[in-house]
Image (tube, rainbow, N blue to C red; front, side, top):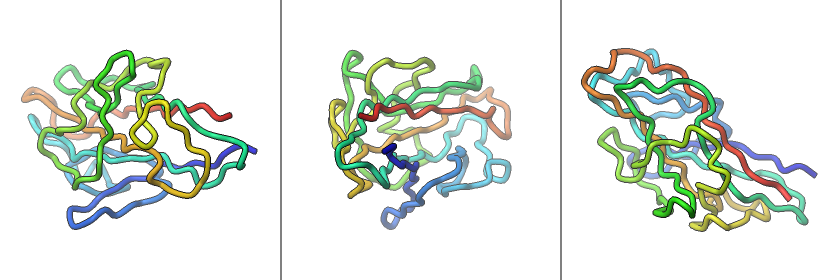
Length: 175
């Protein structure tokens, strides 16, 4: 049986609020799931609010598992006056650290500090329970998948308004 998964977004400064099965995770000037990026643009020289995302396995056969999370940009061009930062790192790159929940910020992220991969990293770059070699074997908890932290950071010459649409791919192995 194929596993059922959803992407969930965490928000709120007074305690984590989880929005399940988000349709998209637009970057903008407010901390809100499913926000309208045309009404909440990122100003020149500013950052978006961080996006804290997790993959949630809602159904999986007891003999199956999911592992080897690989997160990377598959389409869209990042403006030369901007960067899309993430907390993803492979074992080969070194430096992976599990992010814990903290209220998303529009200040420069202390978690999303690496440029997002623009090609398939060919190995896990987002952990499961803090480990790049972890596995999810049941649908019991959203806490199994580590947070993916993303932040769009702009320079002073970045044009005002919406950012160019970008598509981030979530790959994983299922066995």
